Amino acid sequence: SKATVSVLNCSSPLASPLTMTMKVLAIAAMLVACASGKRHHEEIKSDYDITDRVFMDIEDETGKKFGRIVLGLFGNDVPVTVENFKQLSAHTPGFGYKGTPFHRVIKDFMVSSGDIVNGDGSGSKNIYGDRYFDDEHFEIKHFENALSMANIGTHTNGSQFLITTTVSPWLDGRHVVFGKLLEGLDVVTAIENVETDERDVPLTKVMIADCGLL
Image (cartoon, rainbow, N blue to C red; front, side, top):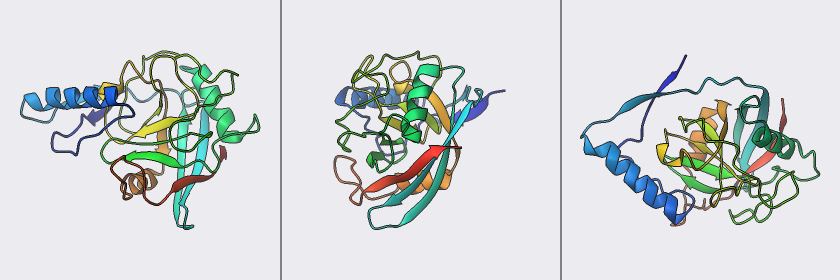
């Protein structure tokens, strides 16, 4: 079966992606979506087999607890990307996501975390030895609540990831989707609605207080 989802609302605030290039692509996608003068609907497959589950407990720097999110991983479809995310979530290599902030939050688009090096979106690290590893494939599209790798271009996957809060077709073919949000939509919504500065950085640090495999 396929999950029916809505593409980006034409009246939504502009979702500026991770790089300037992606911002231009987002604008173009919105213009195409708005050109018909109505909201579009499309069916995007999101029911891939879940092979692993990861939990992340979220709180801010004041100690306010947002709650827990549970992410389902598509290990049969994107095993290399999933293995990296699993090990970083479990701190298997001696480093990982615990304590890492959400460095970019854009309402009606996505929340992004996973910079385990610098915490600001400039760092990258993975389990495979080099700074980056290759894009596995782009067969899975960016449905609402997709778990996807953040990057700075082709074959620059590391530790950073994002969770979409709307269908995001401008990311298709550029970012690898490897899972989805299973539980904690209210938590992601709370993160999505924190106050941010002009660079989409939360004014109060929101972080992954704890994480691991279920």
